[in-house]
Image 1 (cartoon, rainbow, N blue to C red):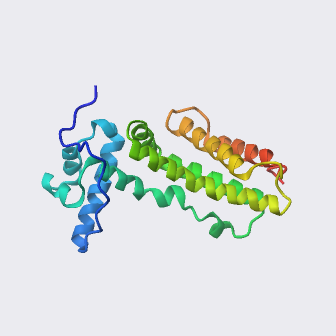
Image 2: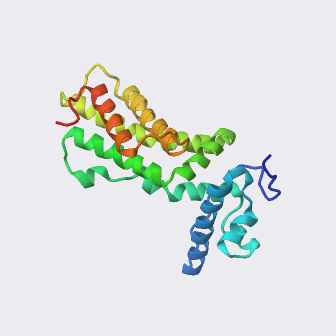
Image 3: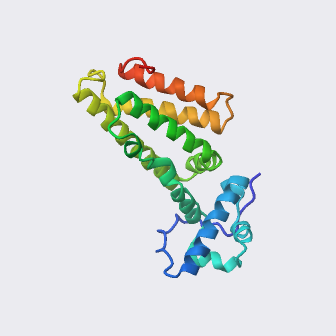
Length: 218
């Protein structure tokens, strides 16, 4: 049975406070976020306690409330801290105006690698999204960033006559994006024994075949 955290706020997390103006304050806040990630990944969200976080960060218990109002709020800060890694991979900047197959393959490969790096936190995020409406909404918004990007790519390919024009770009993007996301969860969180290279190659081929973009090796 999960421990009851007496310090847990029953109200939804308050909006994140502004970043501390002093460097010392910024370092302390960053240390709390880093410590919180370690605790959440180790204990899960339900069993994590604010006292565990402050002990991990080696700060006084009262210091927590200088920067955060609740366990929920610092968990949101932890999730935000990995957004750049998970959402903004700057694929176009890396590959330039690459051929569509290369662009799709690079995007899937980098997403899977980022998911693998953050798998323990993603497992906790999935847990929290099932029990907290605010984090469920945050998860939906996070997913929508992928869907918009991928729908735009599919529509561009259709306009250029390179992808199946009969597909609805938004629905196709949702189906293909969720395929990648759920397979990442199955492999990196649930432990399905699929090597990442095989997983990446298979998902890329399914993407390309679904859009009728041709042989992934060409």
